[in-house]
Length: 109
Image (cartoon, rainbow, N blue to C red; front, side):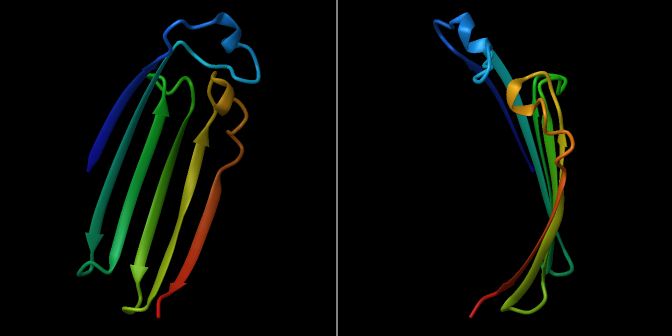
């Protein structure tokens, strides 16, 4: 389990940076939490990663849930989903409808 918190401050901030395409903030708050847990004798790993911009996620956020299963020593399957929440900040304004699903089959030899 881990938690990271950051407040990014731009010294000498110029108000033109608030305009597109940059749309930067003078102070940007972000927190990221990650929880990983192993099950079934370490063959199944579940991971939840949540990243939030703004104290109340008003600048956008995403969550990623991932599961990885070791079928054999050489074969593993990984899959999950990513959920995006739009926010007021430029880089997250239009991502709300871009949730995704991913699946990976890995063979190591």
